Length: 151
Image (tube, rainbow, N blue to C red):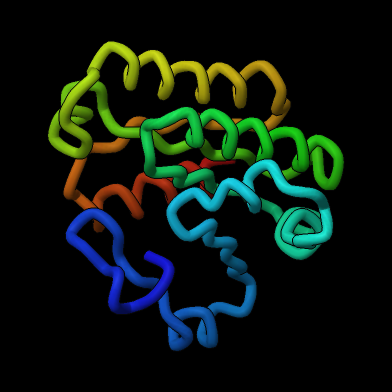
């Protein structure tokens, strides 16, 4: 979530305390898919700030509209420009859980999640695509950490 008051059961809050204790972690929050940030010009500066020195890029795009594709494409494209060596981790829901996290239009949403995974697989030399079980935050975080440590 973009701020503590926007926390839900689906989106937690990584606050200042956590980031203060973990200076190696940098976050870029698009706050619900702001189209200007996704497709905007480089004046925003996020690419250099977050990608240039990154060891790992975890793509946690949560929506299932075309913005998911646009955000994934932008992260992949900018990563190829700024840092081709970073491990790219694309996170999506397990197919059986998709209707739980986002009801309606399951066929389109499944295709969109797969398209984003394919985009990462085809373009990134160092990548992992994870499908995680819905509403299992601790287990999901551990799977992401285990994926990072296994490379």
